[in-house]
Every structure is written in structure tokens, then in C-alpha cells.
Length: 260
Image (cartoon, rainbow, N blue to C red; front, top):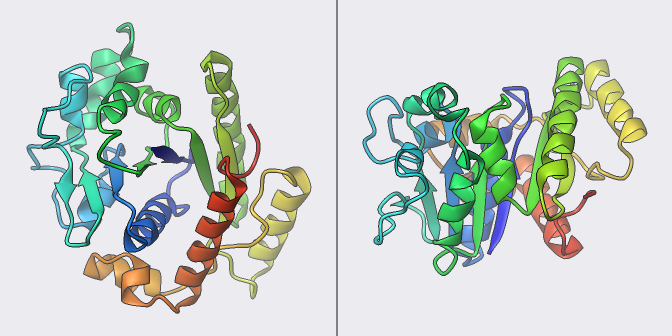
């Protein structure tokens, strides 16, 4: 099993889009793939037609049960797509830091749960919240690969620096490395902001950054409206082709790409 976290300490940079598209691609290739929504806002959950305000079966149950997963893995909901499953979020996740922040062992709840699902899924993608807390710690502790989507604009670069500081703290506590790759997203070559931000990323993170970009593509919005991975809507769109290239690059690297 390969476990991927998709994280950045800034919202709106393409985390959910990256999760849906990458997981959807693997599912289309016949790989049993689970998406886990750890963001209390529940964008990934909403994407697939569930309401995080009212859903009864969610990843929140893992923390209530201290990592116990029902024997029938009932937390993993089937989507309308073959090989693609979702462990949805509940808005109640927002209360976890207050409830569990000081309790011992709460940083490994998700890792233990995923281990119990290892015979069912080949790949797991974790859509992370944009803040450091018990959920982010759980995601990074459970993962062996990390994708950091970074929108090619100035404020997103600040979020990246916060994310890398967080990663440094987590790595000091882990007993194994965590490979990561920085993924430039929402790139628009017509704007100076995108061009300068991409140049900045490549200058400051030459070994960690993916060599290509995810372009601005209005079909991402249409795919979201329809609840489809973009590759299911239009596999030949610019965005779908870019993510397919990213997936092939990361898989070919053997260790997730980037540094550890």
C-alpha cells in the first residue's frame, strides 16, 4: 500500500483537486484507491455528493474509537466510479484539537486505521486541512509520500514555508523518511504573478519541485460541479494531461519524488 498526503498550510491551492484527480487516475488504471477527507470543511466529501454537516459515518468515528475500524470497513464509502472509495469528513473534526490535543497517542490514530485496511487498498490519498493540529499530524504520520500543491502566487509561497517548517518538525519525530514533491498549481503563463512565483519556487526549491506545472483549466470547475474526476470528464484537457504526467513522474521515481 502507498499512502499519500496532500497538504499545504494555505487553503485554495488545489489540495482537493489534486486528491480527486490523482486518485481518480489510479482508479481508472484498475488500482483500488481510497480517499480520506481530513478537512473539517469537507470539500472532498461535498465533491462526491455527501454533506459534512449531516453525515453520520465519517473519519471522525476513527478518533471517537481511538483508531478502531469496523470489521466491514463501513467508513469507506463507494463512489460511482470503479475502484474509488471515500472516507468522508464531518464538520465535527473541527473539535478534535480541543477534545484530543493533549491526549497521548492521538497522532497515530489514522496510521493504525490505514494499516488495518492494507489488504483492501493499493493507494490511499489523504486530503489535509490547511492548519497544523492533530489532523495534520495524523496525516503526515500515516503517509509515506507527500504532495504539496502550491498556487503560483505570492501568498501561497508563504503557506509553503509554513508547511515546510511543519514537515521539519514531523520528520524529527518520525522513525522513517517522508518523501515529498512541490507541485505548482493554477499556473497562468499570461500573468506576471504566476511567472515570477514559479521562478521563485524553482530557485529556492530546485530539488523538491516538480519540473512541470498544473495549469489553470476551467474544466476543473465543471468537473467539480458534476462530481467527476477531471479525467472522467475530459481526459484530454490540459489539467487532466498535467496530472497524468505528475502521477507517472511520481510513480516512476519509486519513492514519491522530491526529498526526504
